[in-house]
Image 1 (cartoon, rainbow, N blue to C red):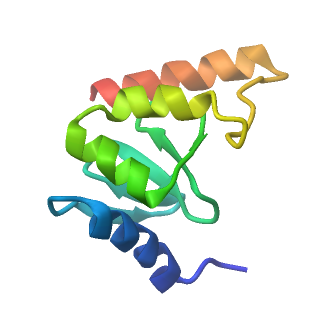
Image 2 (image 1 turned 90 degrees about the vertical axis):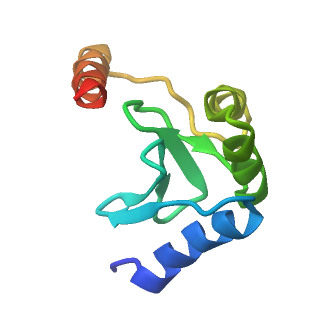
Length: 109
């Protein structure tokens, strides 16, 4: 079953409501890209920095605060360690390294 577009839109709006400034966002296949920095998942409260593989748990308020303060990378690292974030242990290390290389190249472009 597809995720309703208005539900995805509401995720970005919640973050915008907590932010001091306006956020730019665009809906993509896997979620919502915010300010060309992060992507939030469309079905769970997870986000990741563009160019990274691992997802981290977030709350709209704390994510907006981190974006406003300009320390989104620090917030990402902190939330990666949160017990509610999914494990980043890959069974197939070759696939992990291949994808990390692809994501890194995408980020440079």
